[in-house]
Length: 259
Image (cartoon, rainbow, N blue to C red):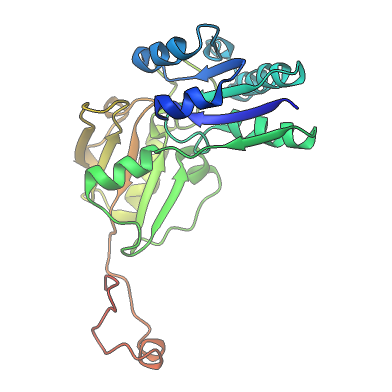
């Protein structure tokens, strides 16, 4: 039986070798030459999915082409591995859809976890999603669905550098929607609330890019396609003292949870 597997490109060499795939498809970020070299060393026949992107082409169209290329390999009876940067299941439609489609067609398919940009953010910024909770949205989704935000909780906004643009653009995205994002955030937190713009390192030994700036000073000049925005709480969380007392938590206590 043919199999399909989605793995992070950071997966150890031994683990990748054990997969012994007939075909390795890779969807790496542009410039990830080191990871591509490792993959080609393991399998010289590896092909790239990046060619399905086209300037100004809807990303959904490119993703469908990637899925069909992977599925074409599986349907041809080949053991197929797709390597994605970061976590293959985080902000990666082709990986999820190829696994779903393969399983529906009766093939064995699985996904192996990796380290996402959000995982790196928690470590590099020294923040814990369990302290006051953490909300996580794609920037365009955050705007068009008018999400209800708890400003006493942390907020992570993905892909702020492509907000409002559904196409692929190799030389910068159309960010006419960025002022709308800023207006929404300033309406929630005020113009002087400091946020962090974060870009996770792609490889060990490389430092992250971290920029702290007040919302009132922020513009689209500070972001790119790899930027994630971290917004700390804007107010203290309230405590339901009746419920806290019923649970045996003393007034002012937190049971290890931030107040």
